[in-house]
Length: 282
Image (cartoon, rainbow, N blue to C red; front, side):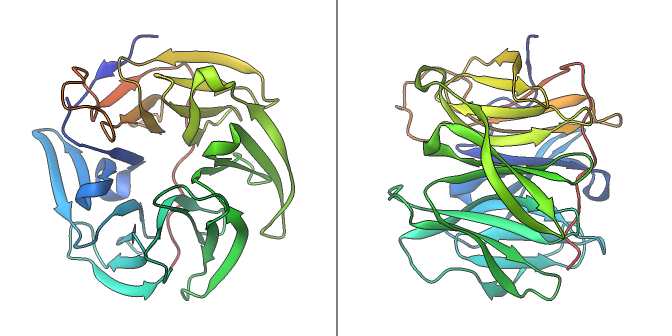
């Protein structure tokens, strides 16, 4: 499988891609710039949020958008409308939000990390539809990919410096029985964002590993997608049949003369199809 460069290096730190027909196709963030990017037929557009960092965004069930900044939750009532700050999620300036998703009930899960990656300084929060906040996982280090199996009975989770993907059982909406799903050897990079396919396979971006790995539902490695950049940040399934894997990459921390297309979005057809994104019900 040879990925195609879809955008060129349009972002410094491209992250958190999501495909949704509700907001017109593929969107992702340029985290340090505080921008939400959209792939359109005539190129890439940006919508700025006035925050020191933009972690991720998701469509809302009512047609709007929810976005998570460094420590603030934002809502827009319609696609491409201006965002308004509605809630403070963290109060420690040394810690910022990172990756997240919505669970099968439409509640928002959002993880965090210290800027200097201090061990156990982060948490994973759950926001209900009324914006009530619950701590789901305490003491995370670099909270990254979160995703659910097609039947909603399993949840997959990456705390990057653990070098593994973990899996939980989902019982009455709660995460139970955390255990190892797959381990990533140090020399293959660090697990980052992930996407779950309709066949139960899990696809994870490898930061520092120049690749995306695909694991079947048992945790066995079944595919490796090589990328021409070192820092692969996240992936999502998109297009009308959800059969294209879109992959974000980052130039964060690379020298100015790195000479790679880091910051580009790539696409590839891996032979499996994704599941529709769950919107935020709030």
